[in-house]
Image 1 (cartoon, one colour):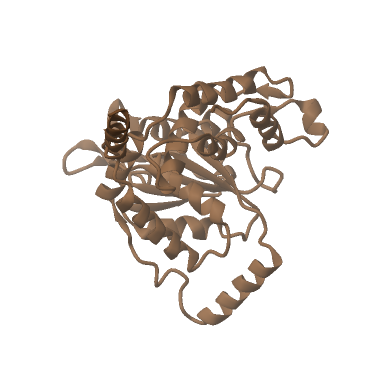
Image 2 (cartoon, rainbow, N blue to C red):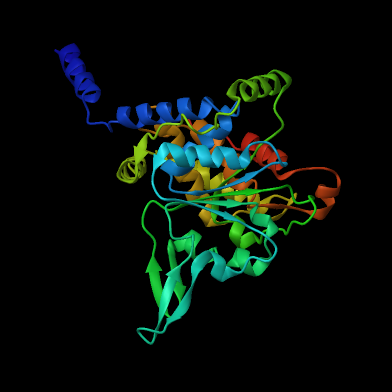
Length: 334
């Protein structure tokens, strides 16, 4: 009798209502396949970009010139059937060039607001650290609140709204360091390294094979705006155990107490790790978060939000290395 009851209990567990992630996974696999027809390697970066879209977060992509930062963003945009804008940041760019400006209409004898390129769904900001601080600051409100306030009027942007920004390393000539307040608004910072030898050969071979054909000509659209919004809502419902929520909090609080860090991460970072971990679980076909999902989210979420003390920076210690030490020092929940 006891065995029968145990079997029935197990049966109820097996048939317990779960999230249907199969359509999401199939769409993600299609986008990956489209991207990999052009992008060589960089599988980790592609996963992080897709997670950021599912988590409704902005991404900062950093790498030296020529490592396909802009191309990657354009391919992502082409796989999504949403409005796309590209803004090339330059030293003379003004906030109104991004947000829009009020123009006097002589026929109506009143000012009319002309929307800037930021009024779109997916915004590619190319070389974001080429523009001065006042232009960068124009993005504060729109990135955090998905709205713009100009001349006393508030304009809400359509969903989805995601910013993909590229930047060159800080030591590159003609760059301006992004303020901490803006860095904190990016869900992820993704570093792109040089390709390995076999990948470099593959890149050259593909370019040679293309001849006069454009790189993006054959990229197929996979998701519509409504699909993205639905998947974002689905990802929010992924299960996270209380001990994992505590694990996230410990990771973030430890950055504030670490002697090697001058500036720790804010509560916004804790929320970012939570949302990103749900995204990683989703693309892996799980309706629950594991410690591995949290660990995979921690470095791209935290590395741009913390500042290494000058003494440790002079010794060559990086924020990534310190975050890895923090992850290793905290006991993984069982």
